[in-house]
Length: 528
Image (cartoon, rainbow, N blue to C red; front, side, top):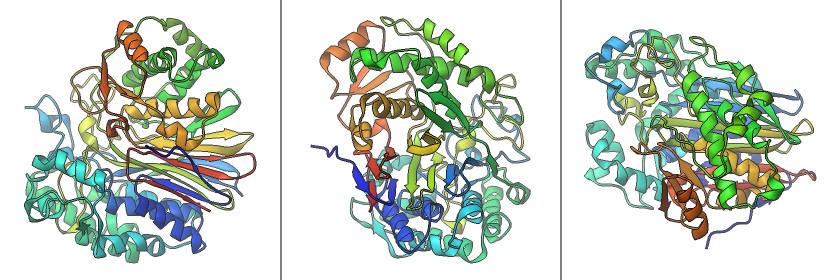
């Protein structure tokens, strides 16, 4: 039996997919740090103790609220393709490889984002907030069930590169649950960053080591790519959904697709729709399909091709899309396979500062290439670029790709009320839509919202079909009705990790902070 009771604190709350990372954030808060300090500590710990889902070789996206500033902001910590990365590099291939050095074609943006968040709003130094991550890396931590399962799943991939297998398959075996696991090379890299700051990663020995590995193994990134990397602050995008204002990071994030789905759903009366019914699942899935169709046609780096957000987020356009939905028939629609590895977390502190953030290597263990002595697993995010010169997300030098990462916040009366997000590529907009509707329309608390049965439609796990994967806890009549409507239903086990790892913090009218973490992962909600 899974626990469906939210953890509630009177002053603070931290949620993440690994209990050690949540504890690290809580420790920073106890020491006098604020939500921004704690969030970076959580992010860094996840890079160590959740290596299959995220890491220093990946990207991060952030939504921040500073109570004194009274302003919600977004930070885009995604990297761009290298100056030498061109479609011609893959002329003999139909697609960019999803593993290996030639899939690692975008500069990692995470370290830059740590620096940006702390410089703008933090109280503590980078050295102070990286201390827990460094400790776990050098002195070891217990292998979690999720790390074990993902390592076993891609064991053959990890074996292909010696340095990767030496770390993640010690003694040539998948480490057991609870076995002490070390990330010593990564720990020394984190010490270098703690001592010398952001530039140690982008302009120092760390960048040099990564580039040397690129040269040795036939990769494309240069020192100039690292030296010229920058993330950027931006205004979030938003939509009104009933009494709430829901915020997402702007493109190149797919966050606008979740806002589109909410705009479509606002045309329906949820008082007449029972939660968990055929109508509930069908309506949400069909609304999301309409959003995905537009997303796939326009999403890329807006510096290369503008994304028409004014049209896509208009209520009039949403009403037209809502009229297309047939309540007894599933629309036929195909999408591209997307990677799934991600780690979402959130922090709210005593003062009311709030951070909702998400980070990723794209696939499990990213490119599966460890960058020499750095201990850094390089992401394969750039493998989602298209090699079709006419595709909006076509591969070009110095370009950000279509990005799945999308942290969310929902505001009520001008203040943050709900921080939420999830792991899972194509599943992110789907699960976010389930979470927010469960809270707003059905009065669920965060733990119940993330624990209720979920679904994932599409190819987020690289599946060759447009299956509707739905957990076995849903009623038999619902499966039957979805199948009759034309959904390609596949029943999966209860609390299946395929549904992703979702987490949520809700701040109620009394100021209490309630946190829920996904029972499908190794997370924890810690508050007081």
